[in-house]
Length: 251
Image (cartoon, rainbow, N blue to C red; front, side, top):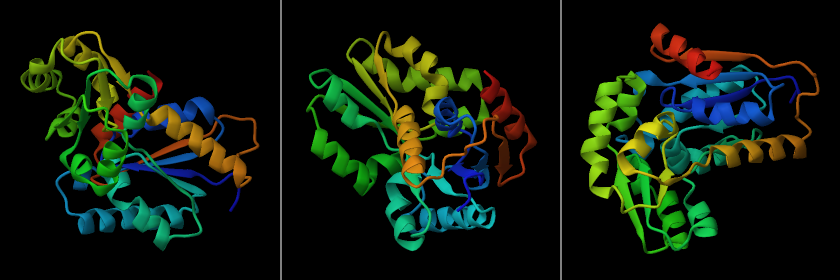
């Protein structure tokens, strides 16, 4: 693999941009190809076999583009498919996002916790292993069905209505919130408006650091001292999504 080759990042939509932003903080000189699979969004209600197939198609595209590493910036895909992909594609490193529930165990164990995630993530074997290993017995798991779609759509009124309807019962009762979908950090302020003062836990900064460590270990860090490029691909060829993606990157 060549140091100057791109890093592939994919999500079921543009939510993975929250992961990319953290990666850019530590690896600004790398080249990136971001794949938004909005044609098949959401992943949370699909079977394991369907998700494996979708992920495989994206991985094959990245391999054609000679990507040197692949980041799964979708909690559902990471929970359901990363092991399958690692076993099938042994020559390329996979780094997968996962809900930051262990961080609650490490930093805020005795406090009430709300895990917000897709139904697919919460039901996955990988998340359940994580959850039962680090359960603080003060945790509520809340599958936020349809929330990622609304965030993807970018409709502020719908987002606020959804959050008020689903989160209002927990206002004043929760200290920690685990953002278990990469879309959710995009509405962190709106979540706080409903829940009140809470501490957010997000796995993206830790994924970025882990990616950096993997590239260093494999001697794949881009040594050129110039800012890298970002290529955006959307499976449904949605120009509006592309526009919103680059607007968020610049924020």
